[in-house]
Image (cartoon, rainbow, N blue to C red; front, side, top):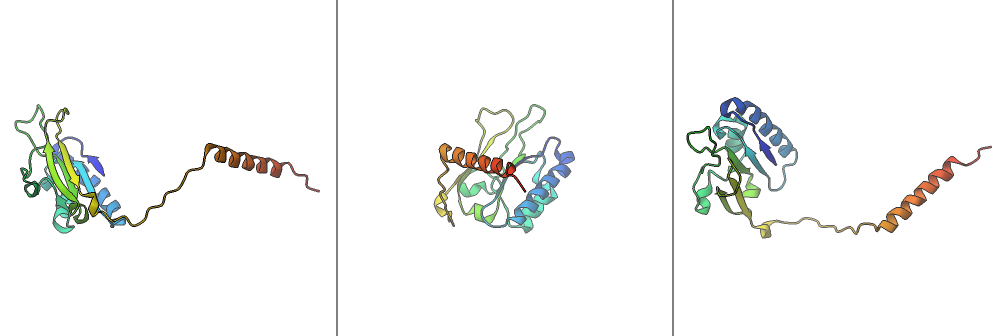
Length: 165
């Protein structure tokens, strides 16, 4: 899931907190499997209580804070704006434990042709995913769809034009 927190650092943190809480509610309703939250907090992670709780009590992981695992700079900046004196870290990728086990590499890419924001890149090992079920359904041909539709229309027409004595 991807969210943008808007603009304004600490002033925006309360609204960003609401977005993270909504994500957590949805995630807790569907707890199984790997989950990730890519978000532009437009605040420090410590200014958003829902993020602090996720990372501390809910066993979520901030990939950027743990980038040293992949020989990358931890907590590397992700935003450069004209009104800031120095680059800031406003973009985050939070993952649960199931997602973290799939991560082969994580990095921040600055030279991406996009003004302001860097790209957060994560490479996953899909061989570790367990596929529980796969069903392939052959779609109906256009002929079958139209034939079924014409039978349905004919039945409706016949059904409305019968005489009742």
